Every structure is written in structure tokens, then in C-alpha cells.
Length: 172
Image (tube, rainbow, N blue to C red):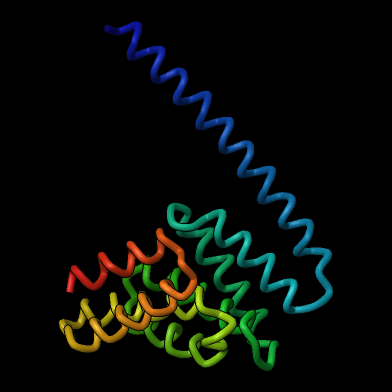
């Protein structure tokens, strides 16, 4: 039994180290692209790529990269990349259970998304807003936001996102 446990622990450590090395290489590659970027739109994109490598377990990384994406997005006058930078900051704040600030970010992000072109982002932001309304025990608003999220996700035919929206609605 001890041998099996030792083998399991050894394999786990090897795999974890391998994945860490892959993530580190990926992060380094993205940082090179970020440092080479000359436009804020590209900086937002690369900051969001770094944010996604840290989400949801590396809270300091999430904070750093969501702040970077948010900061670069503030230099943009409009468009989905401005909204995505704000959305990432909202996601981080949600993970830190700062729901009021996260909700403010989500509402602000929605202003920059085109409902016809940015259905994924519209679905994500509305799903988060539904979650925040649940936390406030505002069930009617929560259902409305979850319905909107489901609408956008069904239009995309994204089975995984649809199931998340269905769970959100069922939870309310």
C-alpha cells in the first residue's frame, strides 16, 4: 500500500512540475508579446491571455493581470476590448467576493459589447449579474439576468455555457 501511495505522490509531483513548466513557458511567451505590443488593444488582449492563465487559482496573478487589462482598456474609446478589460476586472473582484465593485464592472462592461457581435461576453456578464442579484436575494432580477445570459448562450449554441446558465436559473 505504501509503495502505491509513494508512486502516486511521485507521479503527481512529476505531472504538477511538468504542467507548471508548461504554464511558465506560456506565461513567458505571452509576456514577450505584451512587451512588444505597440497598441492598447493588443496590450489588453495579451493581459487577458495572462489573466486566463492565472484564473481562478492564482489570486495575485489575477489581480495583476486584470488591473493591467483594465488599465490598458481605459485608453480605448470604445469596443469589445474595452469591455473585456473591464469584465476581467469584474471577474477578479467577484473571486475576491467584492460583489458591489464586481457588479459595477459588469454593468460598465455591457456598455461596450455589441449584442449581435459579442454574444459570449454578453452571456458572461449577464450570468455574473444574475449571480450578484442572488447574493442580494433579489430573485426576480437574478432570474432576468440568467434568462438574458441563457438567450445569448443559446444563440451561440455553446452547450457548456448553456448548461451553466440552466444551473444558474435552477439555483434561483
